[in-house]
Image 1: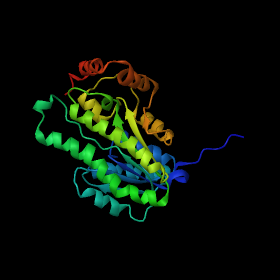
Image 2: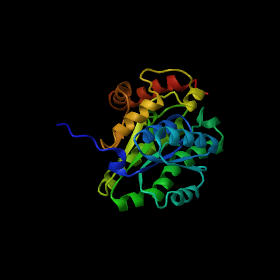
Image 3: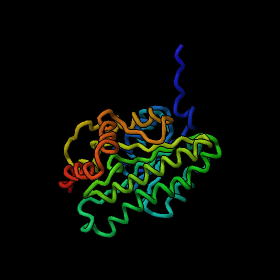
Image 4: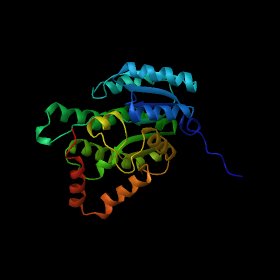
Length: 264
């Protein structure tokens, strides 16, 4: 008889936190988690969008939802998050929040460059430092850091964003080894293009292998425990092999640059 897979609450604990949950991939992660019986802590700047998701998930899935409104670029916000989840058995942490500086590097406003670093690099470091020790003490949990195929090589015209995604990928790989001894699984999701509001605003065109946010979230959650790096979607995995292993580095960067030079 085939053994039934354990549910996410049974494997990791009953609560999940999604940072950057208000729309797009973050909202898709939250929906997938709620459908699998996880109670939710939703984190984002736009409280009215979180309130809509709270109403939807509590009605549709009968789970408990807590909303924490704040800016992940704020160096004090991680302390706020730690207070908000105190007393909860937090089983899954998903850091999906991201900021993108689009356009030539030399023309980008200084504040946009700093925002990328604050949200995409310092943000996950602060959140994990605040939340992971309790998971380790309980001896179980899972962490998902959102990386990107753009983090596999230099990506012209979103260069700082791509570098921040490379940071998250390498961070996840190191933490995967460190934290597994404490029962905590870590994975970097290296997603390709998705039809999120941010992607539509900057690119607004389909590419081969493009997944919906819902499909990317589902495949990522299904892949928890499978290793430090996950690329959802067959076409995306083939692209990752082509760019990361088969093409010379300068060819890969040139290929990507031809596709990103028209971003706005």
